[in-house]
Image (tube, rainbow, N blue to C red; front, side):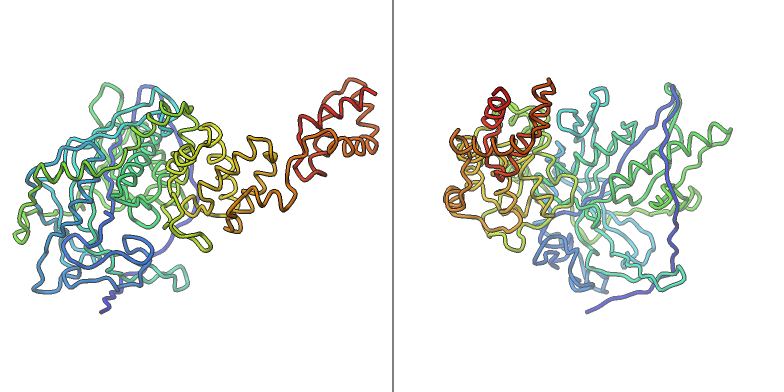
Length: 538
């Protein structure tokens, strides 16, 4: 069954952008409403699946293939609350330290738009299921640069609601576009997360959304993929002189990138200040963000704002959530990011930087489904922290483990265009490689080359040591094996020998580098340096 509706044409603007700061004595006031699609097997009020073979929600399914009659407001269909959605919503709310209401209700938010087939959205305007949460922004977690910017952002409410259909735009030439509707997303469960207006800078806003996304992902409540629409933000921005009442706020709608959100806030703050500085007044408006120009633009003014005519939904009973259910979901939660960060530092003696590197791996990217061509199934630990802890459990020193994961392994994965979730190197293999390097069997250079080869080919040997022996990759670490090569290079480079004898000691590093190159990275650099100095002193 396919439902397609044609909409009006649209044009795409182009241009440039810039940032600006408020003068001393002024501040911006920022509040954010985030809409996160829940990772649940069904939609909110219909049993239609939102799972595909690769990932939820159904981002990559063929258009209009995951649609139940209720999702398109087929006459006579009624909503039915899906139990799995409630548990996902509870995970999100508990990750945000919210208080769960024992009884919450659903309301209809009326407006007409083609992507809303019933003419109203089911939401929780009057009695949301969760309130009074918070999100902590800390420098130690890597979300802020300056301790003076640290902030606890109150979450005033978390409410369940339906998502709308997705509008698809197609270029048809002459700057024109045709738009169609895909109802796969219609009725997918959302949580709307509303912050208090306590943030003052684009950096605050960016840190808040990053931390929020990290929390939702950590408990499996949402994948938080902004470019797919799984996480969308509306931002309320106003400015005022410090000590005066808050100014008139404008709402920036449907921001689907943290970077663009920060640019939009910067531009909007400057736009409002320019209006006030020139003697004007800021009007309450809803504004969009032109990503090409880096500017905000008017969508509608206060006079054009719709009257949503909220009313209780008579077809949906109140949602009852008892303490036993809350307790069961709370006990099932994994370790939350703040607790994990503090534990890693205390348990393994890692620096703040090391922990942040580990916890930030792929954090700025969209979640990629586990598995990749050539990657053995069942052998993956998709989170870098879990992978690191497995290395330590298998015997790797903590500092060596974090260095190899956060630097060498990550570098090779990036070079192969693999996300960490598609890392083919099992912890047991990397532990063996680390041991071979630390025991002096192979050089760090050889270890890096072997690691890169494994990442590129996804061919993981049963024994790294057997590969080293069969290919003759052992470190050249004896005088007998290394002196002939050093003498050969010294004879070929009399100018470097003369430079060293003349006091230019740095020239010896060129010779050591040549030894390493000809030895294929297998030479002991310290021994090579000593042997070359012996030759120079003759």
